[in-house]
Length: 339
Image (cartoon, rainbow, N blue to C red; front, side, top):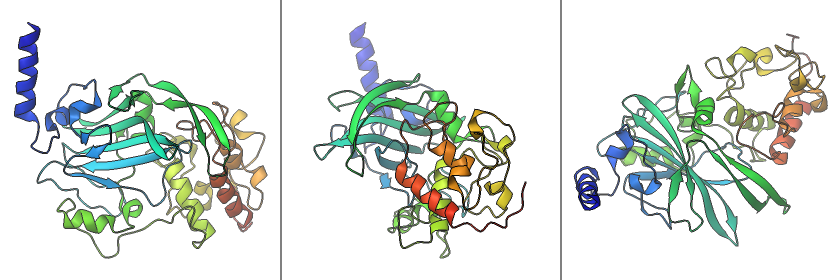
């Protein structure tokens, strides 16, 4: 019986795996593969060598995740294209996959901890977390999430030891929910518009068009860029996936997208919708000129689960990012209306 099942599995793989190794049926089907290797997204998992049509990309300003490094890939099936949008995430076809591997360097070598997949199926986007084995040869599905003890060195040279959190499947939905549906976050023109990434997608036939005026967000650590642009970019990628009118924090009235022009919606002299521990006895989300009096800074500097913002994805404080937001608040004019 086992031999028959094994033969059936091999036949299935032969019929549905692509010549480039990617198993499109695993991406679009309703099953939840137990191992990352079943997708065929990498021709060699030990080296994470990508299969054909797995295009690596990065973001001009990226989400902070406990100083973890990330390897990001977009996969599109043969003949498929992403549809350009100037503001929203690109419209990716059924069969697309977004692949993001998190890890840390030890002795100069990147060690993967987890790979998160966003798979576009006929029913919508599905988020799945996979945790790598100790040998780095494959990763196993962990729908309930897990914790991994990690020691790493931060950019200042400080050694840190944390309990790294791999989110459960529902927590993936918390960040990626937009209007009640799971939606990609990072594949937006303004995040990808650097180092010729959009041009390469267009040249490869994987993007349907590219206007000459594609937007571009600031890089948060580019000291040559204006402080406000850098701080706004940082807050958008770290906070605006929830803090927008269709996000999980829509009832807060605090909307942190990069083009927000209403000072109150941005948090300037805005009172919280509900008092509690999260306010830290402060009056406003942002008190111009006074970062220590601003709820935003108070919550960013906390690791208490009932206070910390963002709520998910970090066990440490991003001191460099907070220093930037503090600098922006210090420079802020003090004439905005109270809300």
